[in-house]
Image (cartoon, rainbow, N blue to C red; front, side):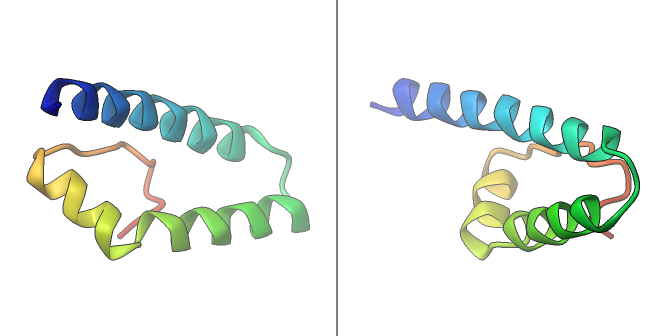
Length: 66
């Protein structure tokens, strides 16, 4: 069971990295600001933070989170 959960976590991590890159590559403007705000809120979800801490994983968000 833990292997499949780990696989899901890795898959999720890859998707998050892709999303962060897409948002960073967007042209400056209102749409980018909205996506950036949503992304910041999502990244700060307690269960998400806990999951990353438990696995001692860091995602390079390029300064998105302080």
